[in-house]
Image (cartoon, rainbow, N blue to C red; front, side, top):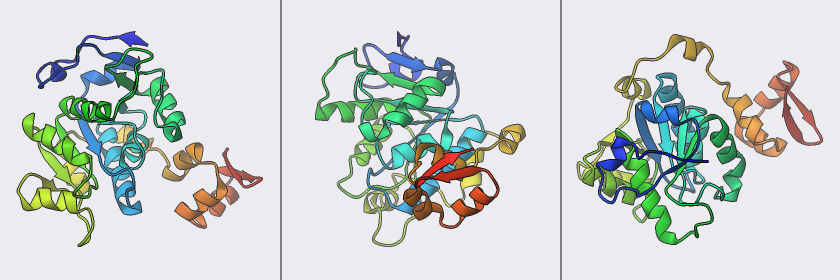
Length: 257
C-alpha cells in the first residue's frame, strides 16, 4: 500500500479527500475513466449489460471505476478487469464486502484499489456515501445501470449533477429500475440504447485488445467454481466447454484448464 498524490480530478470536487491510499497499478489513474454503479440486488439483465459495457469500454482503453460492492459494482469490475479501479468505503486492509474479497484482491494485484482511509479505520454508514463522491468525481461520466427510487445509487447521480458530469442509464422494462426512469423523465440522464455507439464516444476499440478479449464463461468460472451456479448462468454451454477441454468438472466444481 502506498500514499499517493490526489488526482487532479478529485481536487476539483466539493470535499476532496485529504489523503488517498492505493494498492495496484496507479498508471490507470492517467487513463480516461467512466464510473458504473447500481443496485446491489440487480437483475440478471442489468448485470449482464453492465459487464458488456464495461468490457467494451476496457477494449477502448477506458478504465471502469466502481465501488467494489455486490451486484452492479462487481459486474462492472469483472467486465473491465484488469482495466478497473475499485474505490473502497473501508481501509485497504479491510476488503469489504467479504463476498467480493477474492475479486478485490485480484484488483489489488492487476487493477487498482483506492481508499481515503488509513489502515484500521472503522466503517460507518456514511463512509459509503463519501466513497460514492470519489467514484463519480474521478470519472468523465457516470452510468447507473439499475436503481430503484430509494436506491443509494441516486446519491451518486446527485454528486454527478453537482460535479457537472453527464449521467447515463440502461433501458429497462416498464415497472423496473424506477430510479433511473425518473432521471430520464426529468432530463437528468440519457439512455444508452446502443453499447458500441456509446462506448465509441470515449475511445476507439483496440483491434489487438478485441482479438484477445476475455471469454465470459472462462472468466466467470475463474471466480465462481460452483457447478450449479455456472449451470444456472450458462446452461449446457458449461458441458460444451468441458468437452472442448476448456474446463474440467470435478466433485461439482468447475476448474479452468
